[in-house]
Image (cartoon, rainbow, N blue to C red; front, top):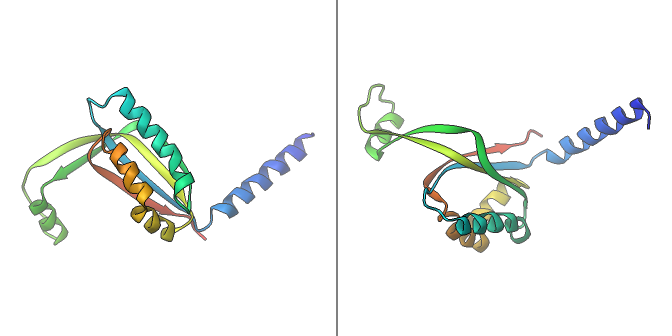
Length: 147
């Protein structure tokens, strides 16, 4: 195959991929690992996560792994958060620094698939395995592909 043909194949593949991504949703969350999680706990988490797309309609793919650069997150108590959300500019209270070292991303059909995933029995089963490897709390983002 000559050079021009290779370039055309790559361009067509890229256009096809971008068209397929339209309207899809990427649900990503980052978490702090439990320090004493066993290797068996981690293997069970990997396996259960890999199986989710087979069990939940509209969930296409999953990725998981250690973050290249851990995400540093500051947290505080509910009272301080309420004051900040109400618009107060200067608030004092306890602050705790967390390091999110792991992440999971899930490619989904759309926002409806995300809602179905949240209520699906397979998701609740998966959470029981997930909770063994992560400390309570996650940092979550949902990205919607442009149409």
